[in-house]
Length: 287
Ligand SMILES: [Zn+2]
Image (cartoon, rainbow, N blue to C red; front, side):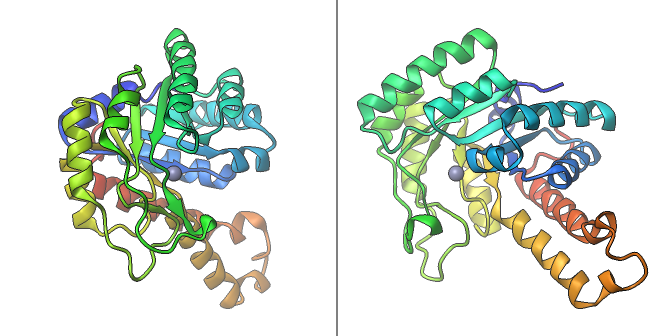
């Protein structure tokens, strides 16, 4: 059964650890993450971007697949199915499709409009018992051509959005989606500290978790980060393992071309990456 992310994140914030959000792209991704969460006895959040939702034939296909898989695999740890960087329309579609959590990313709107739309979604999510993530201060990334420090959110704007009754808040603190450039300035802990001072118990979300050094991750958790998003890192480990399989000519040996064999090394690589992140975030044994 899917659950809202509220309880797992409240516990994480109080216990000074973070729950990983791992983005899914297909059946293998989903299965690898769910099995690892169960083996590690860790709560987990499955992230779905609007693009990935479209790729997987729509949000309903995703929600039904995840629910059936939890059932068939006997998964008992808390699992939230979460829309990542949703538009206002996308959030409504995911709610209708059976997601247990949504992110509304209104960071590109003027703050007044972000507040307005977030407020409407707070009402809907509260009524249905779903968790809602909002964002202040956009988080850069390769796709935006940003190569330097990510944007830092205004702590006062963070406080305004947090007070609307959302479940968790994503704020830019110099983090970036995708791979970090060589000259990256690192996370702005002063900004994070100021946000946490103003937002109190609100679980904070760190996007762009791929490639942030372990000591910075741990410091961010100590300053109130309770949810960390990992996407690119699973893609990189899947690609590397699949490349190795092909380059070693294994697809040409026997029935090595069978997709169940061809995709197996990548599947195992995702499991290893997720396990490593759960250990780093401190969520192992916290289900
Ligand atoms: Zn993000």
